[in-house]
Length: 360
Image 1 (tube, rainbow, N blue to C red):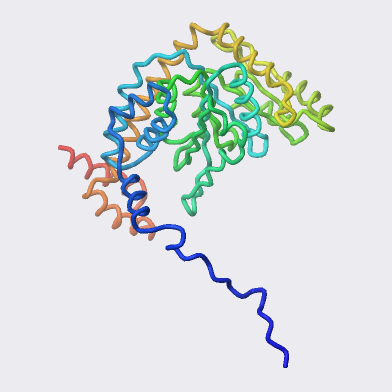
Image 2: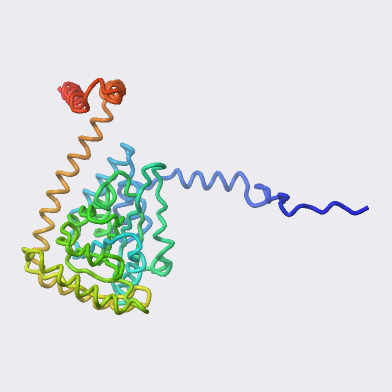
């Protein structure tokens, strides 16, 4: 009689937990995770260039916990006065243009010439699951291993404009950590991606050839904000298409009025995959800094003003929804609005009046 053969789908016995760990080691790990460094130690670590302290501080900044918010404000207050000669570069472009590959190529070039580089990468957040992949460290395999580089992926959350809710604060912390260049990679959703322009010195727009982008070049919006257009993936059979696209984009730039700082945007070509044209891109950024140094620092003053106004709006919104009286009335009025018994405008006015009364 033949013996029954085991099915290939049969579950094999796994390794028991006790074979690879014990309660004492688990307790040590839990205790280590519970230990939170003090604000003073985080500030000291950031100023000395400790990337672990920088990561922990950014985590506090991004947290919605009230205690964490108070600690984050202390850290930012201590770091914002540390004036550094850091260059902030915003990089945007539609999905698939090769932003991560380009940033890794540029980052490796910069560390190769002795620069310290921080990358603040923003990943889109799902409107359904509220989750983000945060896979930029996986994409930038070489740069993530570089001692002179720091990569921090953050979810965009409900923020608009292609950046995360706390990107500005993260920039301040990276500057205090003595990074020479901060590269801000945006979500890449198209022309709505303009918020990053209000927090960087140099705004770089990545484009593709042969993907219909030439027509997009004549549209207003993000194009008139860019300081340089870089056509990526200028390699292989795409080289000829890249040259034609370069001509089209150069023509498109003539439709826009000259910039106040006197800089004339240009169109460059590169292949991040083959590491071609990267040094020319960096040289253009350096030329921009030399040509617009005075206006660049003046621009930062207005960016700080915008930061103040934006923070006021964010905090007002948070306090409004945290109001107990608002939470109670909001549920009732929402039902009435959904059933068309009350207009959204009247309901909003009623809620604002309740909140105003609570403040008195």
